Image 1 (tube, rainbow, N blue to C red):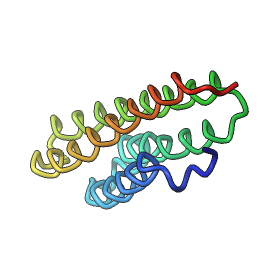
Image 2 (tube, rainbow, N blue to C red):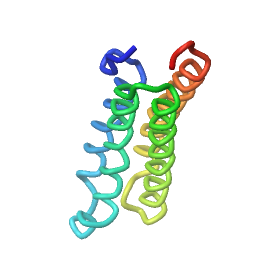
Image 3 (cartoon, rainbow, N blue to C red):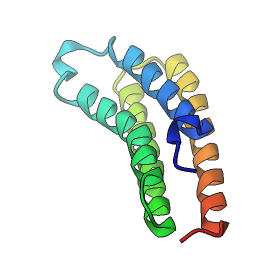
Image 4 (cartoon, rainbow, N blue to C red):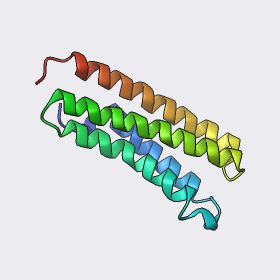
Length: 121
């Protein structure tokens, strides 16, 4: 399947990006070139790598980009943990974001397993 926009994991990651952008809009202005920027880049990297991976010709390449997307999810989670620890993200907002993060990881793992077992090139 090469139409990545129909994938549940891509849709979930796009919802996560939107939630992250809303949350970081409340970060202090002095973080705009620091943590805010890093959080946004990590979030955007998730659906971007899913899309790029699905556009690859070979299964091995596709799976590699999905692994990169999963790495970006964990990077995002770490950055949000930092934001909580330095008191610029309320724990309640982090918990809501964590639900989306967990959902995205679950869906990514499922897609990785499916593609790895599929009879593709």
